[in-house]
Structures are given as C-alpha cells and as structure tokens.
Image (cartoon, rainbow, N blue to C red; front, side):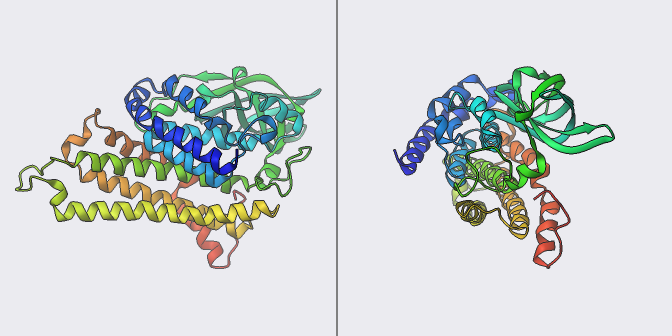
Length: 391
C-alpha cells in the first residue's frame, strides 16, 4: 500500500469517528481524562503507528500527513487531538534513540509516548546507566502512555554537567492526581514522579544532539526524509491541533444557525444578519490563513529532511514565529464565533464552549506564546542573533 493509500485509509477511519470523539467530549472533561473508547478507536485506525519506523511495522508518515490526521482528530475533540499530537511526536522523537532502544520501544508497531521538555530531573551515573529522580509537571498523555521521555541533568562530581532526555517505561513512574483545570481538562496532564528509577545508558540521549538530529548508533540517520528538526517538527503538529480545533468550532457554529434568531431584535434567522455573515467569513479566512502558513514550514521541514539536512537557525526561528501566529489566528477565529453565539453557548451541553475554553488554554502553552516566538522571528528578520538555543 502506498503512502497516499495509507493516508487516505487513515483519514477515512479518523473522519468516521469524529462524531464519537465529539460525543465523548463532556465525559472526557468530567473525568479529566479521555474515555478509553477514544484511544481504542484511534488504535484501531492505526493513528499510533503514524510516526513509527516501517521496519517495526509502523507507517512512518511524513509531517504533512501526520498534521492532517491530527487536525481531523482535534476537529472532533480538542483534548484527544492534543494527546494524539503528544503521543505521535514523542514516538517520532523516540526514533532518535539508538537502535537497541528503538527495538524495545517500537516492538509492538504501535506506541504512545509522553514527554516533558523541562529538565526537572537528575540522573546520577551508575554501572550500565543512571538512577533517575525528579518531578515533571503538565505531563500530557501520561495516563495512556507506554513510555515517557523525561528531561533532566546528569549529575557529575562537580554538579550538573549535561542536559539529557531519558526514555522510561511509564509503569516505572508515579502519576500524581493533580490535574484539575478549566481548559484541556481531558488531557489528564498530571504531574509524574520518578524515584531511583534505573535507566540503561542506551535509553538516554543528549538534549543538544536530539534537537539537531545528530544522535548516534541508529540506522535511520541521514537523508531518510524523516529526520526533521525536533522543535520545528513538534511545532508543525502542535499547529495542526489548533487548526483542527478551529475547524471543529466553525462546524459547530454553522450547525447551530438554522432556525436561530437574535433575541430582542427582529432577526428571526441569524444567518441573514449581515454581521453574522462578516463574522463567519472572517473566522473562515483566519483558519484558512493559518493552514496556508502551515504549508510553508512543512515544506521547509520536508525539503531539509529529504536532503539529510537540518533547517537553518533562521528557518527555525521563522517557524517558531509563524507557528505562534497561526495559533493566534485560530484562537481569534474561535473567539469570534463563540461571541457570535449568544448566551446559550455557555451551557456545558453545548460543545462549542468547550472548544473555546480548550483553545484558549492550549494557546497559553510556552511553545506557542505569541510575543516570545515573534520576538525570535523578528530578530532574525532584522539580521540579529535569535539569542536562544531553543530552536
């Protein structure tokens, strides 16, 4: 089966479960974790094989194909879309580990991996590896993950010596029941804790090398078309979540319009009100503009990966800025539609209010903070050093 056929099959399968994902949204929010039905449906569709190398039975789809699937899932349920993005991008990040580790991680051909980039753990060298201790907050997807990527500092005799990312079986970590939020509630992004967990040496990679794709002892290095710049790749799939949420909110708004009037006015059909027409057109254009921007950075990422190169620092800085701008366009589109709904939209039984709260919450994530990312982009546009290693 060709990649095109695989993508079509996957998209068709995901589109067929969008109504179920949306129906389960209220339950996901109430229980602070998505229903197992959502995970089972995505597993059956093959979603968690998207980033797994083909030699392990995965689909090894490109970033453009992954983004399309993730956006469609987010159109059904924002929290499920966010979790899918985390699990899939972290599975791809796992392909940066040595072959011996990959053989363990990808043994089943389908895998869910969670990650926290903040280096809030410590690794003490011991025979054959390290002892890991630490606490990682906001660990999206930890409740449904098989493995966890935990960033931390190696402790040498004179103090911290290097930042690394450790691959740990999720059942070796403790999950703290502390996720109680007003947005993205279904992601179950709880705190995770490791206490004296042994991590073999081949399950640890340098953070710096992972960021630029120079990790060693793996067969899938070089010009394979899948060695993307780590941050740019993650941001591409992050943006797809926001595009999907915005499209879902747009669908929900339009579905509510037939037969709806505007209270305390003579308008018996809101769709005939000129302001509503302007609002719908503006929201649609913002979403389309965000998606158009996404094609630009995806092209850069794929072109570099095909050539066996990393994006330049300038390209990475532009990707950061454009991603944050696309996220802001999507957030604005949903907010515009939400405010055009009238007071009934705040009922918890109306799905649109959850989409609005979720996209507001997700837009606060440090990876997509508008001003910080535009500053980085603006610096390189003006010929200045980006003054950050987080590229």
